[in-house]
Amino acid sequence: MTYYYWGFTDTGKNHLRLFAKANDKIYLMSTVANNTAKNGHVIVKHITDTHYRETNWNDQTYIKRIYHNNNGLRVSDISNRQIFSKFTGIGHLSQIHPNDLKGGITIKNKTNLSDEDIKKYSDVKYIGTEIYRYLCSRYTSTAFQPLTREVVGNQWDEILEDVDCMQVDEQLRDWIIEDLVPYFREGTNLVPFKSDHLDNYISKLDGFANFIPEIQYGGNLLEIYEKDKEFVWMWLDQWNIKLKNIVEKLKERKIPFTYFDLDKDSYKDVFKGWDYEIPRDFSHRRKFWITGKDFEKRYSKVKSIAEEYIELRKFDEPVLY
Image (cartoon, rainbow, N blue to C red; front, side, top):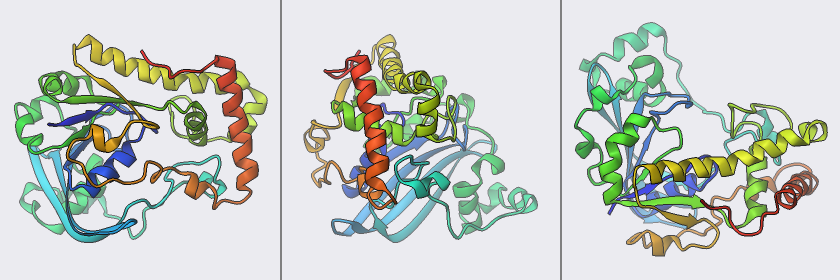
């Protein structure tokens, strides 16, 4: 049974990837979307084999299988034995943790390649070399052409082989959705939501600077709130619009789905055979918020905005469609 997780930003995708990794489940992702940094270039299969497991880390062999377009569909495996720290930080422009307003997580030890290097070593004759793998990992948008329906063709059976869960992002290209409809109908489709309104909107507001970059990128939530509350309310409204759009997409294509409550539903009960559990709050950002300067003051201000919005919109029960 393959699970298809129809999530969008801040709907438990990182937690699910950690859960899959902890259980050695194969997890598929794609950047063939409309607004990602590696727009349209790769499909990635994450494969893990855990040797030793502890609460905060695993000793595992990890394979990152990258499907990409290099004058045809190509596959490159990046494999290594690693001590995997299950959760390392926030990774976005946080309103609650002031240090993260400076830019979130940065990539360390990155080797910069020249245009000449990229052109030379992206030749298919270098597939299997470390430099080609590095290009697949760091330079997909400059080294390779975008993936298209014509390039992928009828190779979805191979791409989806042994996949336990696929992350179906909101911006996934329409041609992929259409090509995968038969697979979706045979699998289990999950639409995540949060019944805890307060925690939900605090978390969303924490990512105000870059969670919906097409509407707002950068800026200080508290300053914008003081100047234009209506803009903040409009921004928060987008999250239910996103959920509605996903549900409509499923219904239009007659794809059966089940809602998954991130606050109440049991991961172990829903994901059959995924027996190694991690705490529900394991990936919650609060553990990092509290390390920031003036946490209580900053958190209470964001919380009060969330409470005002919930009262304004008269939210009581979960907003489902």
